[in-house]
Length: 253
Ligand SMILES: Nc1nc2c(ncn2[C@@H]2O[C@H](COP(=O)(O)OP(=O)(O)OP(=O)(O)O)[C@@H](O)[C@H]2O)c(=O)[nH]1
Ligand SMILES: [Mg+2]
Image (tube, rainbow, N blue to C red; front, top):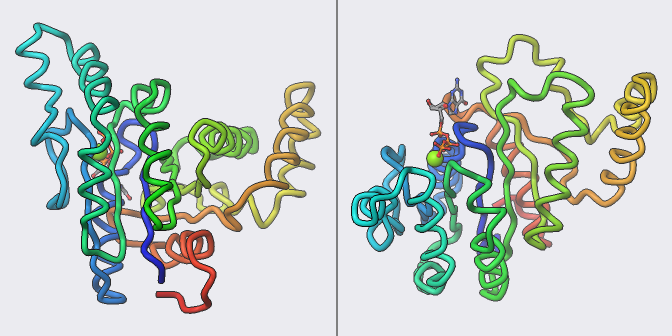
């Protein structure tokens, strides 16, 4: 496989860090691939993997909070501003990394990362490094239960694509605790079914049906992988979708 960069995005607690751990373990055990793990969470207190690059060595939100007398949100915003001015620390480390895969873990406070300019700057510079680059949007299975929720996932992914200019793979995590897996269905293979169900749900349903219909016409991911980062489930499916977007060769590795 070509050398790929995969950036994990998603709301606080959705399982980004656990999935970076699980996917890196799976890639090295399954294919013997060398994986370089990047932590960009300036406020992380615990990381379930050993990062090869850790932004906290340079920019630490807790240290900033103490030094500048800021609260947790103020310190995180400040740390992201500092990162934004210094994205080359990250891109240089990645450029020099002797690895097959680069997995990038991002801050729990997704909005500080995405709604400011740091994520955009990073994806613009990472796109130039001759490695394929995709983002994975991790959602907790708890939030994807109704047909309206599928529309929410589709809209979030297209919003991220528009914002960052990068293909986004939606992933539903924590399927080990999902009460009913049929509710966490595969929206991509049944877009028509979902659109049909939404059409029967009043004015907003009609609106969502039209939005979903259009979005999935342009979606790059062919499936929405369902995984359990904790129990290492569904990683092959995740890899298959990432592989489809990052590699034009047929070989799965
Ligand atoms: N049951 C279950 N719990 C999970 C799974 N993945 C992650 N968790 C738990 O969810 C919590 C958050 O996981 P993290 O990996 O820290 O999530 P995150 O998105 O990195 O969180 P922040 O960086 O704090 O936003 C932890 O308690 C994990 O153990 C999973 O597949 N199943
Ligand atoms: Mg995390």
